[in-house]
Amino acid sequence: MVRAKLTLKTSLKTIQWGKQMRKLGLLSVDIWVSVAACALALGCEKGGDQGVRIGSEVQQEELPRVEVKLPPSPSFKKQHAPEVYPDQSLSVYGLRKNMEDHLDKAVKVKAYVIEVYECPPCPKGTECKPCDQPHFWIADTPNESRDKALMVTDYLTDPKMKKKIELEAGQQYVFSGRFAKSSGTGFSSSEGLLVYAEHSPVGEAAPQ
Image 1 (cartoon, rainbow, N blue to C red):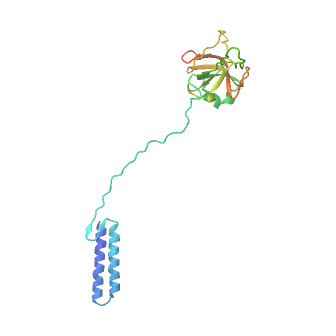
Image 2 (cartoon, rainbow, N blue to C red):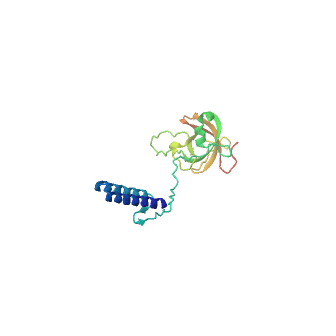
Image 3 (cartoon, helix red, strand yellow):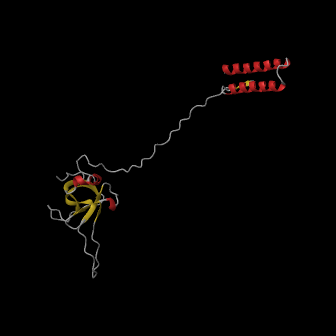
């Protein structure tokens, strides 16, 4: 502000000097007008940056800063089960991610049964396609699609109880078996399948 006032005072003195030179005949009208215009322009320009105008003073008020808080960016990273659970059983994700480490070896997999194969009914007097060997699908979540699930084969009878195994869709189990790309009953999968050995529902003692 002080600097702007000094600049204006200097500009006015320049104009007065020009008037005196004009009276003495040392400045032409054109030159005097140019000097006055330059002095006024200089004073206005210098004072403009400081919020000062000729004949009045303008104080600039700084507005408070507005802080804009945006919501966090959504994560597009696909969620999946842990590779290994605390009880050392594998998830379907972990089994397939490290396929070469587990292929043709005995494994334990904790997963949900999402679908159990049932042979379609065959009306009497109709020639029907033979039923597939018993099998079912398991996944890390109970609502996973079948094309992303792991097939479990060769489970027709419990080797200990000699009866058909009852499994409930939507129930989580720990399955023991051999991880392979084909089974003795004719199933195969490039993503691997589990040849059944035994199982226990989660919450009960896992098979040893």
